[in-house]
Amino acid sequence: MLLTRLANYLKSRPDDGRIHVVRQSAADEDVSVTDQEPVISSAELIEGDALCAINVGGTKQPGFSFFLDGIERRHLLYYDGMTPVVYGFTAAVIRERRDDRRMYTFGSLSQEKLYCPCAQVDIEGLQNAAVELSDTLSNSEADKSAAEHPLKLLDLARRAVSKDREKLERILAESWIDKTSDSDRWLLWDGSITVGFDAYRHPRVIGVIKSHQTHYFQGEQQRRIMDLKVGERSSVFMPKGRERTPVYSWYLRLHPNDGRDVYFGLVRIEAAASAETLGIVDEVSRWLLGERSPLSLPDGRWDRMIYPIRDCEQYLKSIAPSRTLIEAALSAL
Image (cartoon, rainbow, N blue to C red):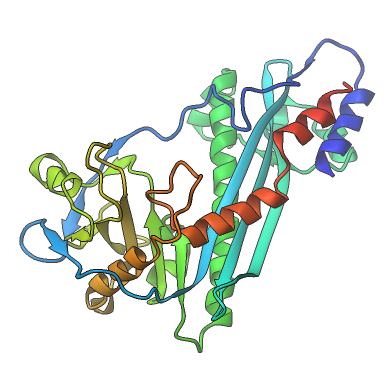
């Protein structure tokens, strides 16, 4: 296990005062690093002349058979001088729902690494200890300036871990495409399908985004999205800034938000940018409405998370190292 090898390496280091072990972190994810900043982007309206609310016509027996999700865990392990060294665990899984309604694992991938600027740590010692490293610094001017600030280095580590998770998800999605090329079954991807080199244009891959850090509309148009009622969707649009991986997208309200936050029960859906997609927007939306039961409780995101995705997350959490395990590996140092 990487953590055991790392602990042995740290024990072998001379006591030169450079190593500061973080035995107890506030969380798996360093609280010093903020999440993605809210962004105002733009979009091209694809359906109709004005953004509006459209009733999708009730629920329908879901047509999804496969579900893809990924997980990432980050833990600040120690400082080498002023350089933070972050442990990252990433994993992804596709779970298959068969006719008996039970969930089976179609495929899964996982990996663990240390994330740090390799030029600022004892890279030879870590490599000799068989610890896999991910170099978080490139030759860009922005990265060079980050090398002087520990919090900037932590943010680079966060981004690198997320990219590795996306890569695992992409590999699994492409494997699913290859293995189901002669099938008419559908894959629901928890997150944006634009990270997939082939998945974003596949006619049977649907992405569901639960977070709303990026707004694609402003003013009255955004208000119409926030005012969507249960079972209503927005007009279809194409997010801009994704010319390499264009997709069609629309919003859908899964649960009522009366007396709750405006984002409660609101998801954004992505599908291939094609005429075929425009013909199935309402049907796919009804499938998602049909996925609302059972609820994904006790997860705090149950209003936007369908149960098969919660099943994926439970599987991934079962193989991820816990905070307790990480701290135990460092406790003897």
